[in-house]
Length: 344
Ligand SMILES: Cc1cc2nc3c(=O)[nH]c(=O)nc-3n(C[C@H](O)[C@H](O)[C@H](O)COP(=O)(O)O)c2cc1C
Image 1 (cartoon, rainbow, N blue to C red):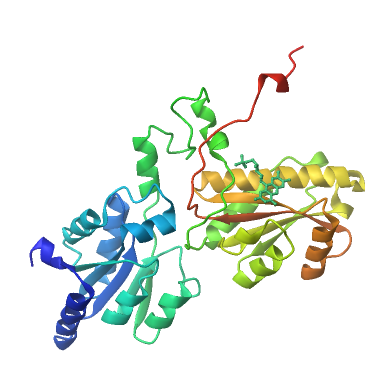
Image 2: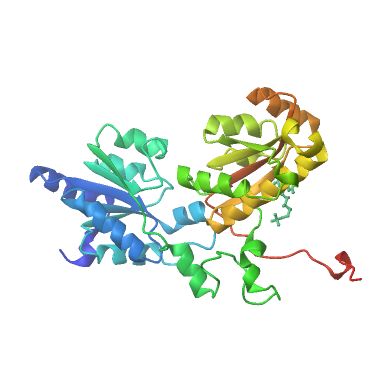
């Protein structure tokens, strides 16, 4: 098969799929953006192909990538992404689809095996796609991505940014590139549909709990909002928290007065604020984005969250952090002005 003929429309793909079925060959399906094809993509696709006899890759159109990842993506056009994928030996067919979800492709070709990245599970696959796949798919396979290979890190390298720190500053602006990570931590309020895996959630909580704390009393505790219903309930308590519903993850940072230094609210608030900032910086280190949503000192929000989670009166919900894979990248910056400091 020549390369161009591997790129099919839906009708062609459905016909090709029937020929596979007739010859008793198992079709593997996977979908994604595959912008700036790199080794991680190639290893993933090779492994996917090994799960069956032929591999169909459904690729997001340019318009749907913009919706998913923000206005600066994709870097490579849909035609070129499809051609590059079709050039791989392990790929047998490529279909470009125009929606955020690949539901229509899966309806048309009914794969025998469905493959997705290892940060997903059957429970976190998109519900619309899953509803179409579940009745036809014999096996769901989740493949771990190769560490350190990603389109985002490639883009950062090209921009001359530090890949380790994942900060967005660098050229110009007078910002020290060694602090890229810190300056690049901006509030992110738009997120991709992709879930945040448990390992990353654990990293975030561990980083939050490494914050400074008066006399190391560590009065904090965390409520992890994994379900959409829990995020909806919390968002309804926060006047500016609507976007929490569309974030794949939320974390409520609470402090317990009985564990704070001197039993004092001020120490509790300082400790929990340090933990919250650590959470946001850790998110940035992990290429996630987040935004702080204020709770304390608004008593109506504090009481609403206490009631929602049945918290004792000694526990103060201080902040909520909305987290996820960013679909926007506000530029790195500082708001420092000379008059903010006095040198003595
Ligand atoms: C105590 C506190 C409460 C905040 N509450 C909200 C909020 O309710 N909604 C929101 O969108 N952002 C909220 N933010 C984020 C700020 O708006 C944001 O940090 C600020 O505009 C600076 O922008 P940057 O984070 O991109 O540097 C809050 C930040 C803090 C520290």
